[in-house]
Figure 1 (cartoon, rainbow, N blue to C red):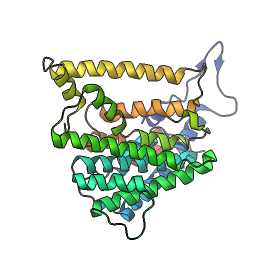
Figure 2 (figure 1 turned 90 degrees about the vertical axis):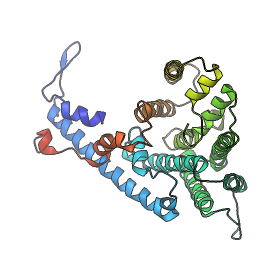
Figure 3 (figure 1 turned 45 degrees about the vertical axis):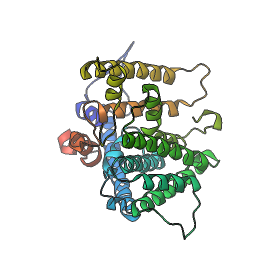
Figure 4 (figure 1 turned 180 degrees about the horizontal axis):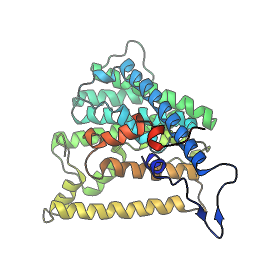
Length: 337
């Protein structure tokens, strides 16, 4: 959206002034604007093709038959396009979107779409990984989710092999195992009506938020080679605000709790930015750091006012602007080259 707005507002007659005024001798500002327009529309067309491919993937694996979950290919594609928009990062976008969709499917499965037996069955199957044809699934939902998880993890590992020159499948499996276990723990707390210590809840929630299986596989597909040393209350569930109130003995209001948590979030965003800008003794490539910072900004877009995934109408304008509405040459009043 920012790039599109900039193209609309770009002043073709502007001259950059530093120590001396500057303009390119070989191409005019109007030419730069034309190139920007062509680039935006080409990228948008590619993203639309990827969305159609991913919607077929949803149907082929039966994700559209899981009535308890949110179908979010287009919304997840928006989050990918916000950070990984160039054509050469298609593998990274596909991985990001698939793992994002599966994160929401699994979250809904543990929240509202499964029994304790089904949850334990899914965790067991992923831990076992290699299953034979006679394997019994607890339910059709478990079968669908396990098979699409296994296929997506294997596909991401194959793509990462091309970029990294080594197999990372074990790491990707472990990332998803950690997420399933933490989601299972939260489901257990909800069933037993248990309020764990705040520190335990936040430590568990750090993993169950499921940024791990979205961001970490994508890091393998953005360019730099990574050594093994550097990877690293709805539906009866309490949220961080409610936990904060409970652990303050109920003497703090919801409004004050939100203010305090926002302060904590702000402090941690500053720390994250500091880590990204740090160059001394840093072994993490800048492209990987930037991905984490961009993810922070995307989360702000999606969650600053409401849950953008649960309230998709809040994101309709952004989705249409970025994914479906090309820039009109007549609207931009550009000269044909």
